[in-house]
Length: 131
Length: 485
Image: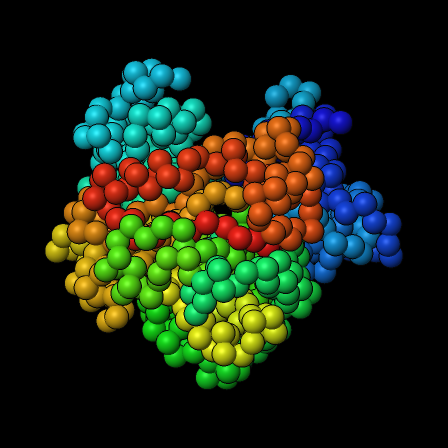
């Protein structure tokens, strides 16, 4: 596991260290899946995601926001990335999920301390969720 | 950290026994001072997290006037601290969606029942149980929420609880009259609310949510100001219900949409910020206009949500205590915690951001309902679970010192994980039940996150706002039962 949560008074701060930019996005999904996982193994589903943003940090925020939106409005609890591709400012992905009852409310994916940078052979990202 | 260490670390100077200040010169980018209403003990707790640094960041916003303010229940947030207040002046002053927060118009509504706790007797548990069956709780989509779409949702977004009353017979005209801004912020435009936000909120009216949202059955344990309590229709041992919820997913998405939009135009307006979450735009800009129109619609949705929750509480009261008690249950008031409003202060038209803070207008203010105008605006300060809540009334000091604002609760001092490390939900449930408090919460983990020790001492917080002259205590309420998301 290359991610970790820091728990503040009313927010959760997610830190990810991964070897590639794609792996940062995959780990972000794993972290969110851990947060909202409902323990159920109901009907499986996959869904497609297409996003664009001005920079990688905002794209990461958009990615998590999309996963939160699908969980809240369609009850799709994310499990894993089946396919993920990053181009200049664009992400396309196929997400494996199950229909369930996501257990943790995420009000918003904030831009507070939002960060995404590459240092040598490693990428680091930080994002704070309002919960 | 001792008081002296806190003072030294942040460059604080004492203004009086309820207020400290970080001068504007403490950082080169601060435009105004940062002021904190607190006592020495609360100040030590406040200095333990990043909330004072965040307050200084707020003091850098273009067009901010007088000072960035913090109420005594302040704690670390994102962008603005929770418990933060900032007033900006048009046209160049900015509006920041992060200065309102994701849960737009999260707030509280107090209902007063026409009976005493003695008269309620052993029926408290049955009433709490019935309310818990009637009010959907938890995360995600409605599961029992009032589903509105198309034109019917537009009317709620434009008019708030008035539309529910006219179209669905929910609530009463008296409820609407006894709601901040009569439950309807001017300038709300349904078309400014994105499809994504409408999707998130479509079936969430009348749902409590999770986290710190709750519904509490209480009794008036003490009346501190008999004249004002009588004006508010409260008397000793009376049964009350306090409802705490907000705009649910619809408001969360409005904030997300507009932080993103404003982040994209910062350079165009020549704005440099110490924190990206403070994304903002001049009040005269089209981006500000779009946000204010959507925020007002989300605020109206939140008031409609609490109106629907109150309707369900009255239905529960009717089933357990009879129709006459339900009909006699009146709304004392409903106040917003997270909202930005254009108001007159010190001869200027200002945009007052309140994030985790309550409007507290004094006696005589024209925006206080006629029935309360001699008493001052009612303010409700919920305590943590199992502790007292307080009814206050706005005082003139609020207009002089805090843009007509006071605190909104006890204020968290411990993370949710930290709380769960110290107590299990089952232990907390047993402890509350041993105090005679009925608990209905589907999640033990969720219950533990809201343990009383995770919050500041609400009596100390109320003491500070009294000494600062922002509000005065009217009555103390103690819990009989709680329903949590």
